Image (cartoon, rainbow, N blue to C red; front, side, top):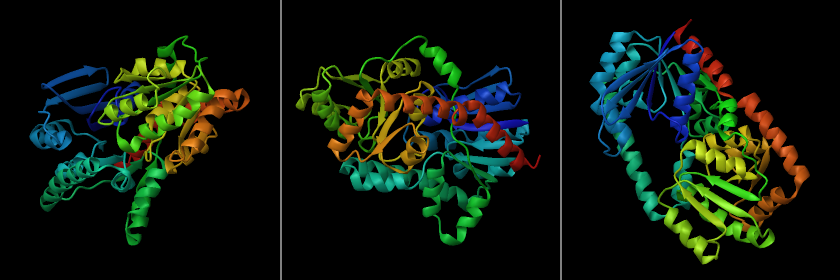
Length: 388
């Protein structure tokens, strides 16, 4: 079977980029011919066994994904015509911009996000975030709408990355269209190489009462709520530290907040790190916290589980499914800083509860989030889409 993966991002950074990399490499390992299209600084094509990576050049002009696919439409179309793929797998919304591609092969699309994120950011975000969100919406909807005047994309199978993501999409789908959506939909969790992650961190042990937060630092991700709660934790547990891994527009705000609460020696800002370095900090920490208002999946949660780390998350559909649902952590109202602080303190001090959550996290990683399970699910979907 020959698969074309329209990826844009590809590599061990960011949720979608990590998904594309993990899936493509595992599919190739299982004997599937995989061609990946990604953005880069220059055109190139390299092949590693059954995995071929085609990089097309594109300037860093926002919106970068739209710019990339529009400027490289002819190259992508030529590649599709030359190779005769069985399935085109769209992991980035490219078919909305290049709908004619669906006339050359069966199509599968992975849905990584849903409408509620925009609603939440509009309600809880700043004016700056609201403006950015509106611009993002316009610049992504308009090109697709114009392209659909020429040809409408056909998507044979849809894959949602969690049950909560699918439920969100159904809520925002007109009632008369919901059965049609469900008839072509499958839920497959994003996967990762559990054994590889454990090898990468080696013998790093997590005996210190440290908390780690790994995220793009944006308002809805909840960094400010975390620091406010952590000040109470710091008073209770004198040697506890909070590690913040990631960068983004909220970073200056979070640093000011840490200074305001006199937490400069207790909150460590690491900035953006390579995945292996972030994983080592996670391995040394006792638990992961994830106060984000919304996630369609949350790769960092699966990474924490691979290392046996419980999670304290904001109570939302994603955490009810991925944290409470697997009995591997606590989902709390992070707007209530006392409640949030109490949950963090509990997992730092209650060894019995921590051990139970840790064991369940390890089991969840192996049973539900290993990349082998993910690849098996996608191979089945590819065959269904192609009628094999």
